[in-house]
Figure (cartoon, helix red, strand yellow):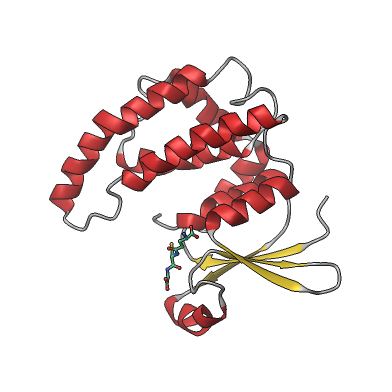
Length: 206
Ligand SMILES: N[C@@H](CCC(=O)N[C@@H](CS)C(=O)NCC(=O)O)C(=O)O
């Protein structure tokens, strides 16, 4: 188990920090979940490596502190620390591959469109087109085991579940045609450490 202590800096929202929080939850590792408001962030921004959050502060046994910026870098570091990757290099590559594909999909989603009418139209098109295609592909790769790659919970199970939670806010019928993904989503959300986190996390709109 890790000998580091951790402080995670982000806003009071799920956003780009939630997957990191799920990784801590799955591994049952304690950390300080520091949520800054706008005023606190204005004072802290210049201390952060790239002037953005999330940032993970890692403090080793000698008290030496390292700041890690970029959500993906933080996730990868913790996945290694807490052994949440696939069991073999090939399994790791399989989940990297599918996650990169899903990340492209998420980057193209119109989450931040400010024109609400336009957003509704773009969302409908996205769910009928690229989302349906991606979920069909992932569904075809889900086997009969407990998690995506067998009996071991990996970060991909966390990523697809947390990602689907975001899509479900816009389309509650997301899983209509994808029973295996629906089951995986429910299995991960019912994992004792994840369900405990979901129950106790601060309630925020996104
Ligand atoms: N690529 C970065 C993007 C980080 C990012 O855009 N952070 C936003 C919040 S989601 C931020 O810090 N905004 C405040 C600012 O730039 O002052 C990551 O994935 O961590």
